[in-house]
Length: 369
Ligand code: BGC
Image (cartoon, rainbow, N blue to C red; front, top):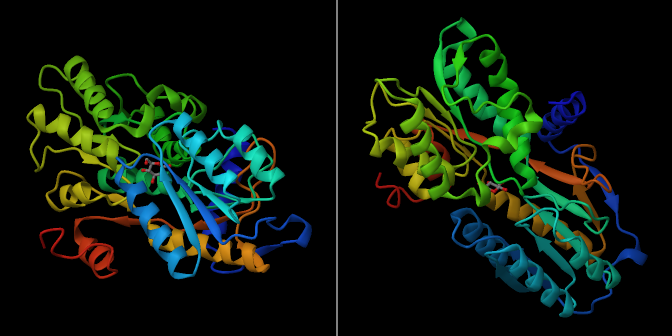
């Protein structure tokens, strides 16, 4: 990882932990939306990924409750998302909230938004290579990966010199700006143990630097792709009784495929079952955590992200101050986008109830508790 990135990432961490000492961006009248409507456009990625389903409906619900009209659209492809955004801009919304499929493909569409003075909030994923993104609301993405790396470090006793252990590593979709932050956060913790021989990677799929993370990425965050990749690695490199001890998975959609692959190769929950990380606290994965088929998930309470975006929308529309707490980390290639970073939380079997049920994220019933 470049020094720069590491410095930026640690700034991100500090910023996310700094409670509410938010800096601010005062909106000037010039820049305010030219629209007289009350419409907020919400562009979300694939409905098939549980996360975006939940995020979309929560945001839609709270914006409506706050008195806005909304247009909520999910897209399955970059092209579809661009068309949806163009259509929304034609309706003159006050604000456009965009969770991009491809963080680098929206620049031309957003030029039109700027012409019409529609403010743009990047939701969860940064939009790159354009000046026309005004704010960014997300979780501390580097910290997500760091929590996964630290979990592995602690569970295996790596700090106490234990090892060697067999590790397989995966990264998220190459077109998602978040994926490199997740990988870097984890790899900064794990790579030194690979270098010292305490973590061994039988498949050889071990990026030499954080910048090479796309060599282990899974396009579109697809469960099936992660499953077949894990199948291939197990078939080719885990012969003669060799066992995988730990799998770095950046999120739950990949972790699900990885667990399915392990199961099909005869791995059973218990002492020989590998540590598997995840992110999102998806329903199937939370059940897997309870069933000892996944070791942890990094929970990002997407309700709080929605609430933060509602505050941003209100400030933009009503002419207040948009609260941000990080103005250094998220450079989109054209500018540093003022961001609000929320803190992610590790959930293991022991605290599914206290963290996910008591907070109302899931009912006990839904988890079979
Ligand atoms: C999100 C993750 C999610 C992944 C796949 C990322 O941009 O931050 O929470 O697991 O996309 O949907």
